[in-house]
Image (tube, rainbow, N blue to C red; front, top):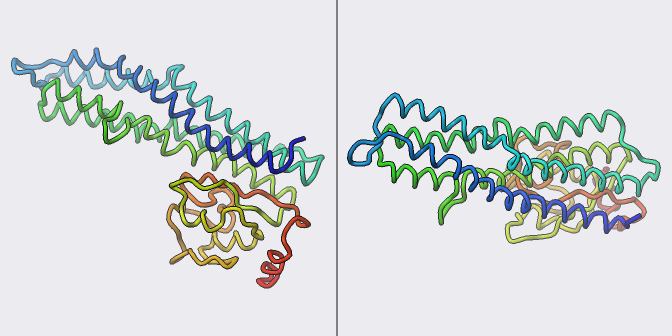
Length: 301
């Protein structure tokens, strides 16, 4: 069996690679959707000067375009993006089980933990195919369409605006790609760490190493904790908005990127916050530096 260090490296690698895989696939999906929508948009009725007219046919065409957009987002290409996401969670579960088995070789997830995992996956999927998709992708696109028809914009300007909304411009990414990039890492990490947190309770983990590496966008909260070992009680204090373990970077009970609802328990799932790639790795007590134990003992943890 792989060493704990190797397992953790695989976990971090998984967090890094999945959003990139999803983004690459999404880029192609956006283009395919646009190619399917463009002929319908081109059929909008215009006057002699090329401006879209406010006709019953054009209003009806909004519904046709909406249906086509929703149909495309339910197609196999976008579903493949979601499958990549789900596969990453399943791979993470295997790795989490291997970590647990370093503490208890006989560890197997309980029926309740398996059910909780399924609920976490369902909640995460809703970000990409449910209300999250509607609010961040279909609605902005259709609003752009309605605005242009209401303003009697030219068909040429309307197509340019809609193309920019869906495919992006030099300044901003398309709505679908932006949605995936914004939520993929957080949704994956939350689902994965929710399961890991339940497992860590089962194996009775007391000490954790804060791992995930640093990238240009790593926030101070994670920078200050990267590679260090902490007692469970110290981590719970952060969740309560209280500085502990000699780190003084929580101001007025919060920090940059903190997810609303973070508390003494959920911090083991949310960790540093939005798009946090860090992971609280359980460490066996006899592997913990005595100074860390002394620090925790001084706070009666």
